[in-house]
Length: 102
Image (cartoon, rainbow, N blue to C red; front, top):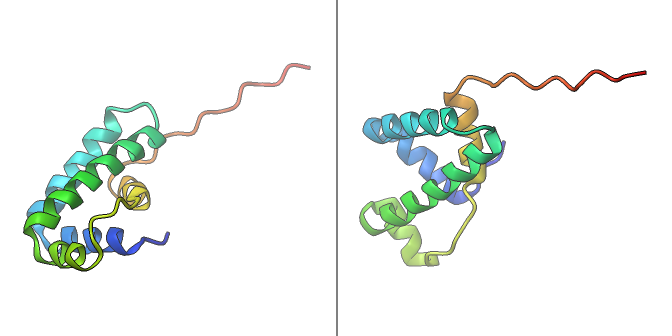
């Protein structure tokens, strides 16, 4: 899986800050447990990740510097959301297709 520049920055920042990582691991697990499918969980996490990026861009150095140079343009964080779902949650069993009647 390939992460875009902003996703990679968020990933690296969270990995380097234990409290941030603990917060996101918990959020990913709670979000996954509270939704019916992974697509819904990924979409919800993606929205929360963007809010997090906006908030961090006002106070944290690597985010602030990026926004100062490029501006604050909405960027997808879906790949990061999906990666964290894979890393920090148990895989859900796949539904079996209904039996075919002959």
